[in-house]
Length: 204
View 1: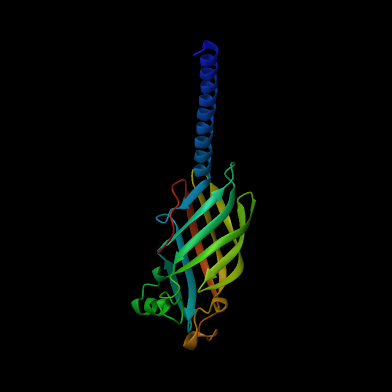
View 2: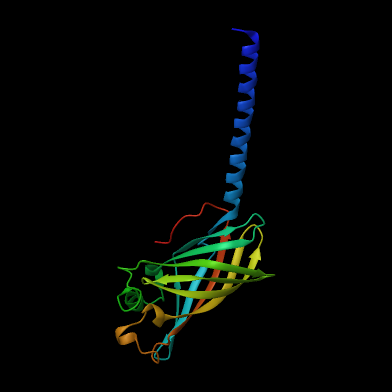
């Protein structure tokens, strides 16, 4: 074979090989950057609790199974949030009351095992964060806004509270529909810690 042809083949191979290696490392870098921007909820360090009352008696409860993920830009600023709540994990430290919460009059866990919140807009100012989004509960969707404090280091922690109108989602119907005996506004408190780990769905 002519030496010039061989030289040309070798030169082209070297060029294409170098391009291939460059593309490979660029792809790896892009995937690494993407992984760094995704943070998963750490359920061991996070809490989601609720407060209400029934016939004047205070009720404190919490969800023991929650999960979610927080997407950040390349500067580490939160851009979107998704939170999953296993409704069957609601507990008020009363077996009878917890059984009622799981039933058709409240969460109807057999039909709707999971609630979900998806952000649509996040506004950050200093240590305050405002999150607008959609809460999907019992097959119904409502727009809501949550205000919280944010602390960013290796992890991102959101701390705050909000109020959910239970009647919008038909939580507490039948004999529990009376908003005098059972107020329509349920206070929800949260501490959500997001870490740089593989995000997994969902609370079930």
